Length: 290
Length: 143
Image (tube, rainbow over all chains, first blue to last red; front, side, top):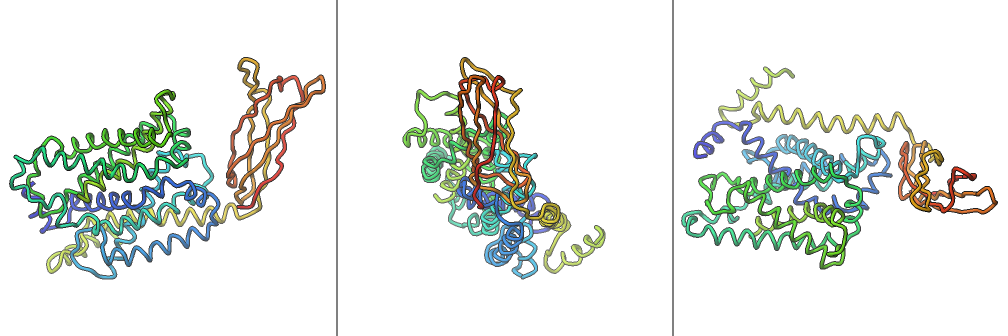
């Protein structure tokens, strides 16, 4: 770990590039997750004219050029128009991939669907997702973040840090979870996912959560040893925050009368898993904010 | 365009200011490929399908009726073979039994994209296999 900053100063290698793209995906999902769970966005994609899709891409690209000039997602060495255009192509591609993955996992698109419906849905979601990717540095490059609390006395405060993280996860999860739980999208999505989609959803949620957790600790200045508390290892933190997110998702659905204790278990489970993705992203955002 | 050229460029820029490295060239190439593929697919979809108005056909394969207790589940397939998407597609299904009684069912499909087939099910109390089933598209909205 200690040789990492030296290596980064020498050359921008695969590790740094992977971290940069992780940051781009994290930014994309933080910014775009509510719209991925909006059915009007799916509908627009179904019937939008093809020329409009080209226009959407062009306008998003222009917005990305401006936003990557201001923020971007790569460690900034210099700001130039060429570098911004490069990054904008990257964030556009990140948006396309991020949107394709979530729409496939949520069964909004399937391999046999008409091509223009798939294109429409993917591109409409690409707009917010790639804007989020272009803003990633603005979200994650915070000096006073949780990683900025210098881990000098970290050992003794491990449990306090863990409790802070737990609280922030719950607050962030409640913030996003309660705003999405009352919508019809959750039941609609839950009804349309089968067991394979559910497994993919669990994997996707964990991966997205891990990427955000990892990215939030990416700040090169604090790349030294992280606190060794029980919630501080990235994988542990991811799994714990997923369990917390699923609980928040369940209670949000229960308190808003979307599920009840007498309901058939598979239906409750799929709703909780579907809501678990935005709740997980919200929880990660909460930990970033604290 | 070749990889060696890119390496040279990267190496040249590395000394004064670490510009674009090989890795970044590769990821930029992949990103360009993804974006170009998407644009290419839009053009392809536009060229191959055009924008003819919706043409909607509905059919009810009577041989695939499923019976559970005293209900008969008749699958309905609604296909839009036109180019444009149809919204709120209404399909009426009526079953006339041999003794002259008529049962009706109606299906509403939110969105039916060009070239898309939607699956629905009509539920009757009489066996569709022993009667006459008529399926017809009643209406749709232009989105």
